[in-house]
Image (spheres, rainbow, N blue to C red):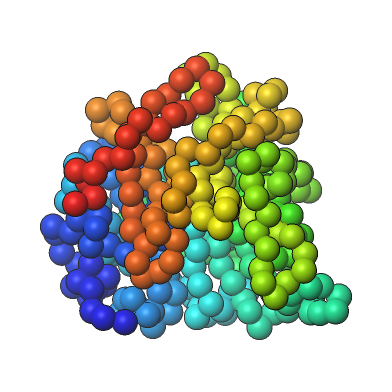
Length: 330
């Protein structure tokens, strides 16, 4: 691939704009202690100087100019994951005084099932958690023998949720490749996030969205429904909502659901999509000025994918997109 200075991990520098940075599944950590925005994204050898897959961070004071990239994590040897098979959906949470990286790892050599038992070969994929004392890493894997969700589940995009009792959970997506109709599930975590602390619970399935059109692959008979990018937030009115992504009319979309009970168990109702046109896997953050923003990637495909930011309005029971922040994209 052609050289891109915004992907040059050997020569991080200031002055990058979002339009310069190849970004897929972008995630922003707002660091109040240093008035810094940290944007995490996947780092792949094809775009960087890395010899193995990892996670990159860029930092900014104003969302306009970004400094980086800095490598905060690389898939190590001697773990369940293959260093050359991907690092998806990295996100960093400040929890109990430390910083926790949630990242989806893979091992394509570890086969779960093959046809004719299943319609498509499935392999080991799931979210792992790594820890650091700093948002700039380095992050070290906590559990090295497998992902947090069950090994026989093909999962991705795990995120941290703390319930009304202070109990931490990992909410994740169960791959449509394995279950055809992709689902969202939650598994309780130990207090130190070192491992699961119970059995997974079903939240809802992608086809629950009435607007969602089944994606039909030309060589595949089953209808399949993609479940991606779950993120949970509590509105000012106390309502629990989940951002998630799927496909509609062949295009990636950013949508939102709301829990009718206000609790993780739901039941969940599906609202209208927030952003269409091959855009998704977004998350919300609040600026230092107190404004809500949505960051997502557009288009879907790498290396063309870029982070896009939208101004968002918080209502009593949801979030609404106000406008794209074009000034941050140009």
